[in-house]
Image (cartoon, rainbow, N blue to C red; front, side, top):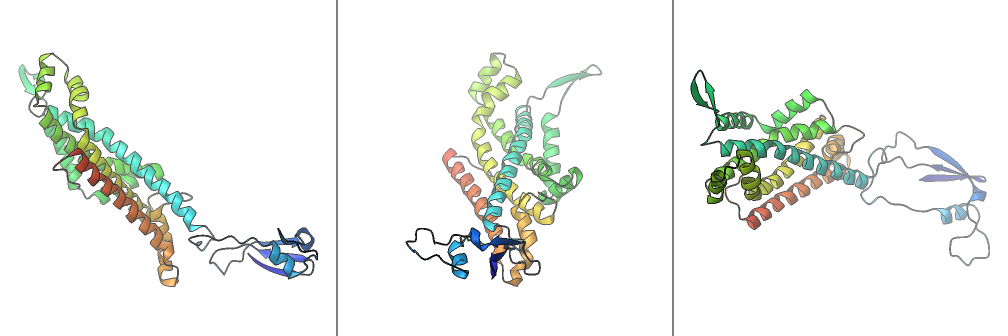
Length: 300
């Protein structure tokens, strides 16, 4: 705060960040309301005038400074962490809910497709071909362009972001699950389950899927990092999380002009947070891959 002493009144102007063109709100405080003795002092003579004001001042600092509107940068970075983690978590859950069932069906019915009768002839449902055709179509479209298209179709907003991101990441999960199911379905315990007359649904969800979750966990960690990058990119373009929500990508978009005006940390700090969090989840994915001894899993 900036203050001036006029007679028996202290005029205090609120801190308004780095915006010198717009003055902060002014408050009037009677000098008699301020303590005449410093806290913890053994002085017997009371203070007066500017000495009394100086003794009553409480200095507060912002660790990372403030932006042009006086908002604490550290608080905004912490709030942006919640947004990024939320988008990553929900997007990964959506990709798992779509990718695991489709990948399991494609892998299980690759060689034993269900049959149906048409015009007196027995035909097979091309389950694997249809699912893999859909996967290849989605895979052929650039990820960011597809996310932008889905976001524009659903509208701007926080909910739309993780729906759009989740609807583009399920293909990686489906391909990994399909490959693992094709491998596991040839094992003896699956043949034994078929001999006992178990239904395909029971075999898939109770016997096969629990044995293929290692690679799924690894690809989910990589997708988490990808979702964070996508959310930051969408917010930077202005179609991600909207105000008053705080997003790291939105902070970079709002503050990148300050790089050339002497306040580069306003844009560099959220960029560094994106880099650190993405790197952390990529390292987690690599660690899980080594711990679970999975092979041949690559990101998009």
